[in-house]
Each structure stands twice: as structure tokens, then as C-alpha cells.
Image (tube, rainbow, N blue to C red; front, side, top):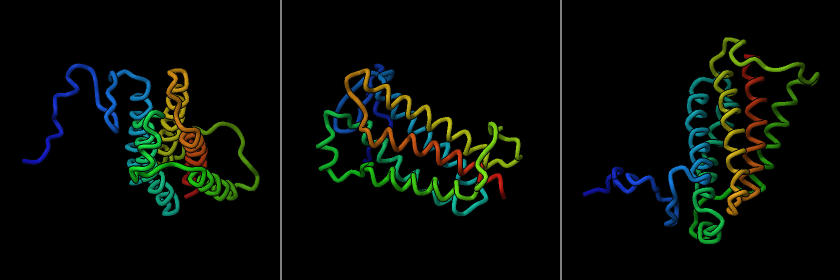
Length: 180
């Protein structure tokens, strides 16, 4: 018989993290993982809503990388070596550098820069509005990951930099999507 998703192990308010740790469902680590998961789901809505193929490709790569973000956050610093040696995907400075390059490419389409605040939805383009929503969720995921330092279980610095850069890129992608 296949394993069931319904284990009842969470009925007491505890849940399993990757590599065997158990925490309360309101633990800051679980908030960080959940925010990254929510970001991935919202990116799925943006992915099917945007009109630009280049932005769709950026979103697809980000979603793939968010699986590694969630894994690294779920494993925690106490299992970082075990996580990396298990063959799970990780976020490295190369991922952050890729996002930086993608942001520079999107920003180059605006040689005169930007003026004022963006107003999500004002363009009437659903894809651009979803990109703005994902940017907000990315910022929340970044705050949650950063807050882990106060628990004594800090998130890897590459994860925080990745989420920071991703939120910048998503803002730029929303501006590009508005140019359709």
C-alpha cells in the first residue's frame, strides 16, 4: 500500500522538518519555509498569467530554485552538512549572481530609470499584478528567513541574498510585463 499524505503526526501541533527534526507548527523556521512555499505557489499564478516568454522562463528557474530554498530552510543549520552531502539541491552565490544578471538585463530596458511608485494592477495586466504580489511575498519570505537569526538557527546567507535579489528581479519583471 502506498504511503499516505495523511499521517496524523501533525494533529498535536508539531510537524516534521527535513532530515528528522520536529518543531511546533508556529516555529519561525516553519514560517520561513511556508513563506517560500507560498511564494512558489504565487509564482505559478504569475507564470501562467504573464505574456512575455523571457519572464516566464525567469519564473520557472525561480520556482525550481525555491525548492532548494525550502529544503535548506527546513534542514536548518544543524543539518546543513548532512543536507548538502545528501545530494539535495542548494542555493549558492552562483544562483544569486544569476538573479543579479537577470535583473540587470531587465533594468537595461529602462535607460531613463524609474519615476515614482508602481501601482499594481493599474496597467490592467494580470501577469504584472501577480508579479507584484510575488514580489511582496518574496520580501516576506526574506524577512522570515532573516528572523531565524534571532532563534539561534540562522538561515544560510545565500538563501537570504537569493530572496532579496529575487524580489528586486520580480519588481523589474512586473515593469517589463507592463510594456507588452
